Length: 177
Length: 206
Image 1 (cartoon, chains in turn brown, green):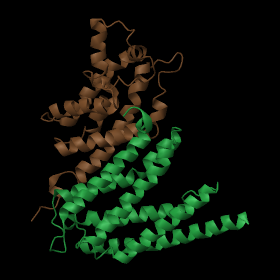
Image 2 (image 1 turned 120 degrees about the horizontal axis):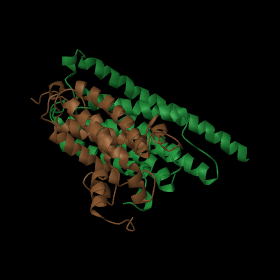
Image 3 (image 1 turned 60 degrees about the vertical axis):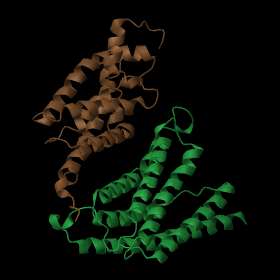
Image 4 (image 1 turned 135 degrees about the vertical axis):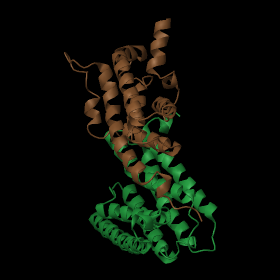
């Protein structure tokens, strides 16, 4: 990693793929990187409609960072490098993209829901990881890094949609007497 | 944290589940022994319910990930069933002690379930020390699911405004009763099936 020249451009690229260096955390970079997504969702919570802003931001991050997959793999010297955490940010933003403004409880639950599916990687996440790896593929390696987290985000969104509709709103709770 | 037994997610999940179980017990302890048969319904009952649901549901996940990604370890083989038992038996003991939940969890049923676990653990460690294989069977897995449902129903009943959703608390109470008795039946049943298996194993040695 250190053999890479730390030019200003490389530092900028590192800052982007690691979501402000969150992905450079020495322990559990994926989990720490997801916190970047929580921060984005928190900053977006006053927007209307919230879900469209989240999906829009997720799309922009996807389109910008998909081109930087090869660079991140070369920089870290391995496939699906830990420093690249914008996939977690995109997945988290999809998980929280539901109707209505999220409560802090919803944002916290979405964090766990997304990390669960991201670690579990249920079908077809593991197939999507391989996108862009084949010779002559039009997709880029960055797509493979990002798409499995997009799918995990969709699973997370399904869970969060159910939770936020039926459970997480204070109106469905028993009021303490 | 990045080295040793916690380098990969399966053992991390097991460790997080253990911490979750301890926090759950701390919440139970914080409720004390309210005078009323019903515990006061506050945010802590919600937290307890969800904590139990998540720690119970992730029971399957750590073992599954370890097998899928070839990360099966001695630590995981010992810690995973240990955490399961701490979570389920610990919850049942608390529910048998707390006044509001005693009606569903009589102490003697919890004693039978505990006795079954000790017996099966004893048989398993002996058979495996002899080089035999003694994995959990389908009956044992059904028992685990029924146990978790019984605890989940008892905690869920006090956590939400069910009447507002058109669900009578009495129905949930009956469901909990049925599930606790089903726990007793599946515990004894799966315990007997392990005894039969052990007999077959030992008779093969002779």
